[in-house]
Length: 93
Image (cartoon, rainbow, N blue to C red; front, side, top):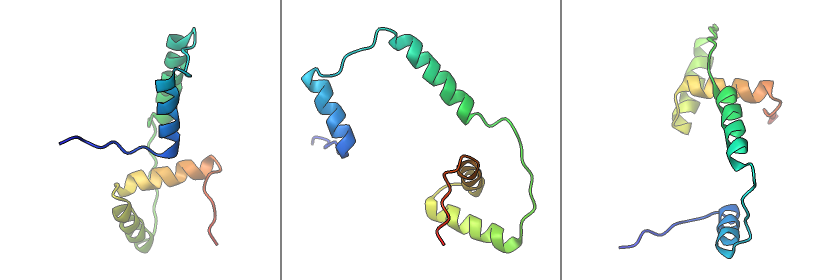
């Protein structure tokens, strides 16, 4: 039995470009990869603790939403804060 791979439109385009030889390596690929890795590690590093008090109702609602998403509620809270401080949280009202 063969395993069928599913690609979205962007992935399919990248795969097609790779297979056709349209993609070319950059001269400083190693340096660029190192810089991107450092930036990602710095961005994703969780080195500070935040303790807050919220209502029981808000906590239960947060936990319920996290359960729907399949992630821990602390992770959801951190994600929401990250989106807010970076201007990516959109008010849906």
